[in-house]
Length: 247
Image (cartoon, rainbow, N blue to C red; front, side):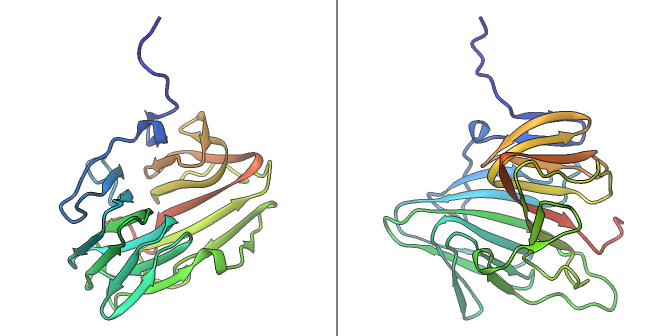
């Protein structure tokens, strides 16, 4: 009998699937006392971004992150206060913020509070003739999920999908029970996918993998990919690099 615990987490050709059972807590000096789960960083070649799951500590926290990278933060549970350039936002469930690379930010969490966030970090890729985008905030829970050409699939675009100043998009993809992506996609863009609700079967590199709320998938460029939602439907937050040519 094997003494090694079973896991759905795995690495395949062009993808990595992490489940909550695979989480290993790291720490960063910027977030004293917080648990930092590194879902993907550029150490996982060829990833060009970092995505972290942050569990902020129950004791009071105030931390600052200096400028130099563009950042996207998304509140999952609880609430933390985000501050930048005289502005502030409560990062409760569904609240999000894009902070440009020219701007640092601070996070505050009161003693006894519980906060879980997703944090995406990457180097901004400038494009000749286009200035960098400004900070942007919103709350996904206050947005209407728009129908798509795919039956049973709706999406909420959290950044300017039609704005070429952005070099990545963040989308909340919502699937009705049994709905599927219409094709197996193979493309140059890489993905970071966090399951926010429900589950289903994800096709990755020709393999079928069961996915549930709290799972994370990194998909490298040209990884064959497709999805079929389960009986309870599904929702995931999707990172994708856009409007740049890969050089």
